[in-house]
Length: 101
Image (cartoon, rainbow, N blue to C red; front, side, top):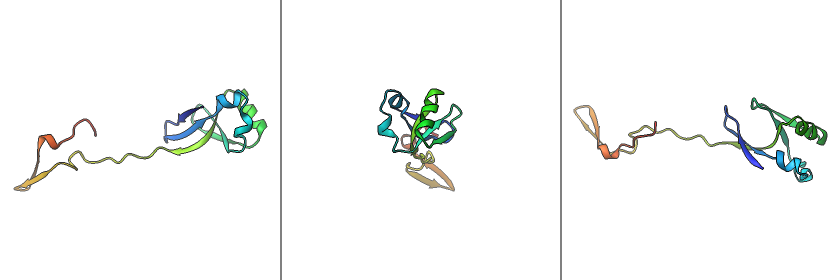
């Protein structure tokens, strides 16, 4: 059992392929299972026969987890102490956090 994350939309899947191959299929058939293709598209598997066919074709058989949370992007000076002099803003060099955009 592992985690698979699609590249484009950062959707998280619980990869059950190994568990299903090793004979634990009966535990997972009550859940909505999907075949996840190499291009990150997916298809709902509606029967045990479809699950078997997906495993024979070497596809990932997964269960939905959800999207990764989006990170808030802050401006680099949002926490720095600011001073305005003659229309210009000044910040302390030590207050600036470099390395993140």
